[in-house]
Amino acid sequence: MKVHTVDLTPRRHGKDTNPQWWFEEADLHQHVWESARVLEGASSGRRQEDLRHSRLYSNRAFLQLSVSAPGREQTRSMADAARLTLNVIKSCVDTACAKISQARPRPLFLTSGADWKLKKRAQQLTKLIDGLFDAEEVYALGQSVFRDSLVTGTGVVKVFQDGFKVCFERVHASELLLDDGEAHYGKPRTLYQRRHISRDVLATRFPKHAAAILSADSTFSKEDAANPQLVTVVEAWHLRSSPEAKDGRHVVTVASAVLVDEPWDKDHFPFAFLRWSEPLIGFWGTGLAEELTGIQIEVNKILRNIQAAQNVCSVPRVFIENGSTVNGAALQANPEGLSVVRYNGTAPTFMTAQAMPGEVYAHLDRLESKAYAITGVSQLSAQSKKPSGLDSGVALREYQDIESERFVLVGQRYEQFFLDIARLAVEEAASLYEAKPGFNVLVATKGRSEKIVWKDVQLKRDQYLLRCFPTSLLPTTPAGRLQKVQELIQAGLLDKDEGMALLDFPDLEGSMSVVTSAYNDATRVVESILENGTYETPEPYQNLGLLIRVAQGSYLKARAERAPEERLELLRRLIDDAAALQRETQPQAVEQAPMALPEAQPTSELLPVTPVI
Image 1 (cartoon, rainbow, N blue to C red):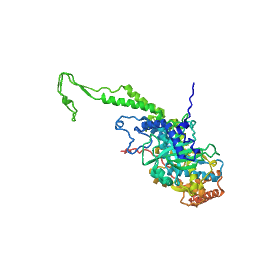
Image 2 (tube, helix red, strand yellow; image 1 turned 135 degrees about the vertical axis):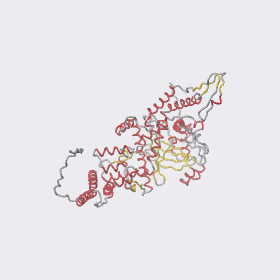
Image 3 (tube, rainbow, N blue to C red; image 1 turned 60 degrees about the horizontal axis):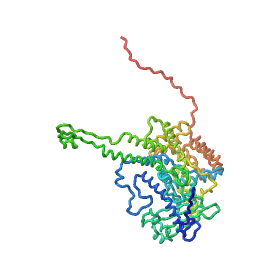
Image 4 (tube, one colour; image 1 turned 90 degrees about the horizontal axis):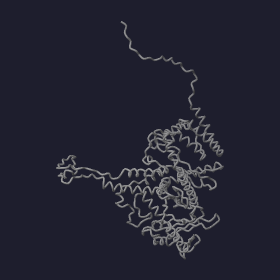
């Protein structure tokens, strides 16, 4: 067998361009643009598949995934809008997205064998990431990115600096370009991002290159439509060959100028990737929409045939025998519902033909059920219905656990996705601190705000482990949360105050804050000692028993973590002062025998008395 080998590099890049642009100094923007254009043409098939799956999910005839020229509307036509649809892809995607992305994985920074000071730094670093996630709405962003992974196979988030803050941005996978041969094992070393940005915004950010930006060509490929308000920007990264190598590079270019050219000493790109299904070969994942494309196309074909047959056949018709005299005007629709038809000869016959045989409708139902089976969810879940016969909370939770086993691997990838975002955010925060030493994040904890400065939480990479945990192990619905808390209280694992604090119902916030104020006050006093070394003298108006219990538990935990002796001494002082104050405020027991109560007489039913004569 003859094997054909083709060297594409010289012919496709030309004599004046070098695909290894990270070694070039002169005409750098030309080398980067030509390399990106070559990959743009090679990945056109992938973008067409993404466009097809986006059309099937949205039920809209998108013209392209990139921006279009002004006035070129990317919406479905009137014929498409009037067509009967049963979008199983959208139903399955939205159901799977709702089941998995409702979780809010929380990255936790843990230390192994570290002293108490490093452990407190790790706890504060966790709070800082919480503050960044809340400020930038990362969990809502993660839901959109997870939907992208369901539709196109791969969801992407970019973490970068913008001014003096860390930003998180959703990126369409169609904007990213890479060499599929280099990414055969899923680890490319060169990556490009091609996107369109407003000329005015980009010129304001790079004033030294304003003239080149305002005059740059906005057309990057044949798919791009000329839009004078936008300019095409190509951003490229090349990872260094080894920790000692100096070939890592990061470049931002427009068609006629280089805007950014700097070394890239990191071993990864500034992106976090989430895939619905990991690929066997290559970099890009497989989406749920791709798995259901065949079923959706067959469903669309059956629905078109049913709709056409219904319009033609399922119309009432009147058959009148030749030679009979029938008053046809009386057969028209009568708003009063009563009409008199006079005829001579044979009476007219009314008939409505069957549009489709029953097998067609049964096949349509089977296809819809098969789509949900492939996804791993039930039609009841998609319709927000519970199975009949499952009425108890335990049975419903067991049913949810069984159904969720199908998404274990996907859920683990979803958690790992947020860990990757947290790692990138820590790196950007450390880099931002070098430019702005006062960099800090405002964090809301337990109804109060706290400012965390980066220098107080900064840890080296080898000083912590990053793990992911759910923000709450309790059910998300109010009924499920209430039942779970009641079970924990009845089992003796929680007391009433802790259970009330865990309920956290927004509509009862005013009443709950009064009921749980004693518990919140006790935790605040103890946290003030452990975090700041600030001591507050107990007051008789506090719940002293609860304060002692919380302080004792925190003392034992801090002692096991080898907290500083001065903090432990403050906790012991708090426990002793609260116990002494509790003894002073307790009423003296009356030492006397209780008074004997008269013995209760048995009661009996009153019967009527018969008078004696």
